[in-house]
Length: 69
Image (cartoon, rainbow, N blue to C red):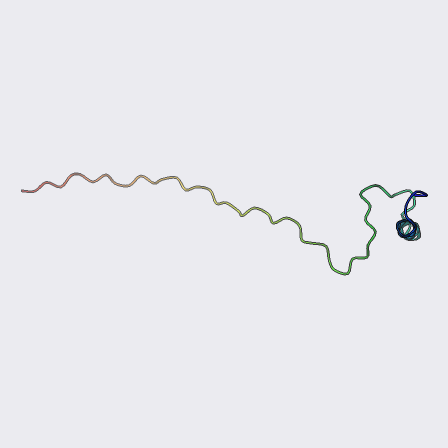
């Protein structure tokens, strides 16, 4: 951090201080996000539509051939 530009260094220092003040000491990882959500989290994935079992074909009455007289 000592080699960073002053503006970037101050930004990083304030983010680290904010994380420590929020009680994240020892819990921070590279995936940690520091933000206050003003909205609810997005909904989870939509479950796939329920599928009904495929009906088996029903055997109908066999019709005999009609004959003409």
